[in-house]
Length: 266
Figure (spheres, rainbow, N blue to C red):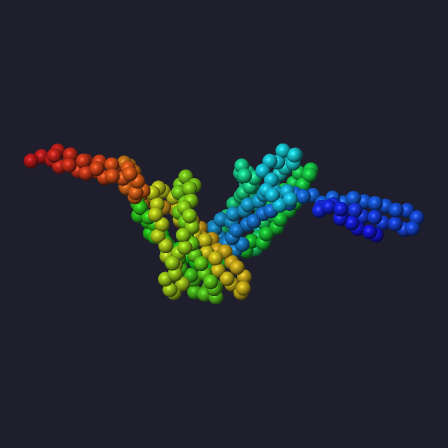
């Protein structure tokens, strides 16, 4: 048997028994499914983000017109034997994204599949829903949120712990990740500015037995009492935004105070 590779992705196979010769051309599809799932270790209630895209010769594929009836699915196989279909959203840049929120501890298998008459690819990830190793508290004001992250005593074997936080508004806009400062005794703290209702999210990376682990805590939403009501709340958020309109808002509040003094009876 003779095997030749005339060009990348193409093989020529010839076999002869002395009397007959057979030749076969084997072509490998240049399409590949690239996927990711983070964190690999999550706590119950913490979202696991899944992303996938199709590449051709190492380049992301944006148009799928020639892949007829393309279907990208995300399935989670639970330890109980049940399976969950995760809703998938397709983005203009060619990404397929989904999010799974585990409810109980255990090891789950997350399958990402891309199927069409021209393509059949699958990626599998092991997701460990582990005991929670960190707790978080948040203190809210109309202008910012202070977070304190505490590492639990039974998880002190973790090394190289790096915690970071970000603020996600109710409109879905997320601020850049900011590193939380270590404070000793397994505590980490950070303060984030905010100008609208939303929630604070945390991601923690650590090393455990030479293995990189990524923890995600369930996001904490801002309480209703932290949101100033009505026009007063709007102006407070305007002042906190530190924009040129802040001065106008301050002048308006001063004028209202002067008018109230004038209206008081002698």
